[in-house]
Image 1 (cartoon, one colour):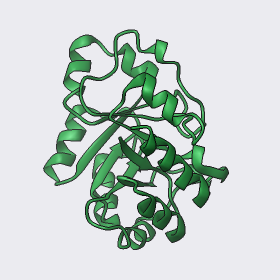
Image 2 (cartoon, rainbow, N blue to C red; image 1 turned 60 degrees about the horizontal axis):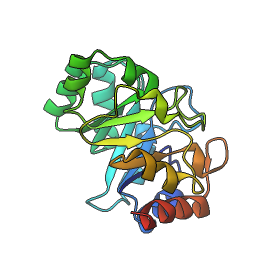
Image 3 (tube, one colour; image 1 turned 30 degrees about the vertical axis):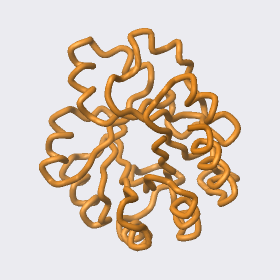
Image 4 (tube, helix red, strand yellow; image 1 turned 180 degrees about the vertical axis):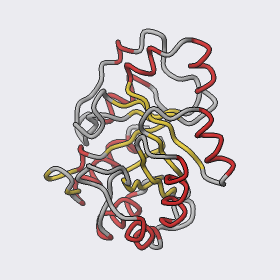
Length: 204
């Protein structure tokens, strides 16, 4: 079970995630989020992350040149696009040397035409609730056309209490959490991070 803890902003929470066994830590660069950090601060935090743990920069509907520049300055290994970005944008990021994740709401992914869905299945995907970061889970019944065939992460409304059962029922390659390990909006809780990773890991 691949585990990503997203929206980190402090050295303490990054260390907690890494020490508890997270496979990836995420830094938000899209404007307007209570979790947004600067490229410079993310670079500082990223320097404490050991090799083998992905550092992920999260962007949403930002110009691809800006994404590449910010990701380079932040020193992240991976770029996650969380808006309406295209396969061409993913190809650009691959060409620039980044690993990638492409987030879809469950509804948007389900609505893709079959050939387009098949094209996206070659990418690492993340399926989220309709409103990212709102802490709401999506109903598996939404995916009437099926879940992705390749590597995909389940996100949206996960927390230490429900991650094991939802991962068991939906069979993703991994899970992603942000608001589910917060004591208040945008403020991560070290104990919740540890509890989440423990719950996800111990059931798989």
